[in-house]
Image (cartoon, rainbow, N blue to C red; front, side, top):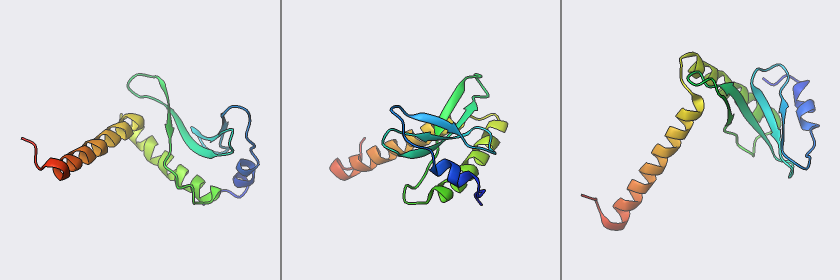
Length: 119
C-alpha cells in the first residue's frame, strides 16, 4: 500500500539533537517524529473540532513492523481519526478515555484477586 517513493524518503531521515517532526508527503496531518536515538514514530496532527486547538496523537505502531508496514497502518488510523473528527469527536479524548477505562478494569481485577469483591 505504501507509495514506493515515500518510504526511502522516510528511511533517510536522520536523528538530530532534539526530536523533530517531518510531514509525510502525500498526506494531510500525518507526521513522522524522529527522536535523537533514531526511533521513528507516526503522529497525527489535527484541530479539535470542539475547541479549535491543535492536537497531536501518537499512532499505535508495532516496532517489529517494517517502516513501510508502519506507514500503511498509520494511514489507516489517520483515515479512521478523520471520520471521528468529521462526526464531531476528538480522537485524542477518545483514546485517553479508553486508556482510563483499561486502567480501571485492571485495578478492579487486581482488587478481586487480592481480597475478593469490594462492597
